[in-house]
Image (cartoon, rainbow, N blue to C red):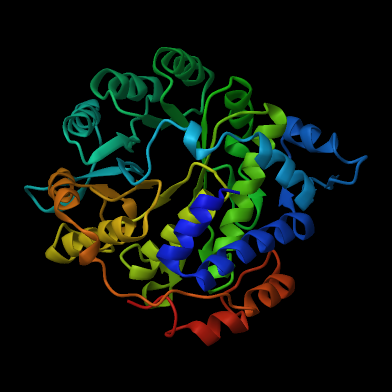
Length: 404
């Protein structure tokens, strides 16, 4: 652990909230040992089977159970924050919207083009508040998009690799500039490896490329409905990916991109990214990872607005100010995205870059820091891999926690 960061987190968040984070880490270890992660990928299975004889891992019926001892061993070989190429408190143009918002007509749903991708990269490169970029939008041709990003943005990049051709190009880019990450949402709720991506995850890790491991459990659906409940489930899923990477290729750079999310019953249990508590959850995830000395990449500063309204800009200012007040490592989604991260607005991108220059910690709303809720572990023991919508903790906290 990073003891200096531990003290900084206590000063920023309070000792009781840091205690909650440390207990969330222990709960995540319990999840990995007792609930395990479903995985059919043979090389990942084989990597863990090597520790079966010592009792540090069990592979049974395509499910992998990992002990705390093995997790800690894997964390020891993962490079730390000081070795990473992006400084603290960095905002990225990140995420992958399927559509572009037509700012003149005020409607979304425009299919992205290479010209859009080039424009995003050039804006990222030209503005100091932007520390780097992900794709922002998704083009069908991964290699084309990687080339556009590389040619037009000199800052750190992240992108997906889902083909052998894009893997070869990623290896070439990494050899040239050493500041890229390959993004994988390796797991999906409840605690299952996404086998659509697992083969390429293995290939990327074995190639020695830095991996950005995302996971998105939702409080009230796939995780207990409280701060430490959803943090522990998110943390467990990403820790599984970090362990797999370290066993396949020790020393691989792993970015913890756990993205705890809240199911909002007022909008049919969809996520509401404009909540103050959504920003706080992701800031707390960041602090836990920094304490563990893991490079970390969360989500903040976005909105639930469908259009770039004044409320959308107020949400951006609120999220960015909270990040500046409490401190983070890397943040995605703070600039251009609209509701559900579906549309990418260039007008909002430019305006929120300006907001990032202006926002100060004093602009952050006053919040009450959460503490550990003992009921989360009871929920995990009772519900396990099930759905948490009818869990007593969910019904007890609805309307009282995670509210606007």
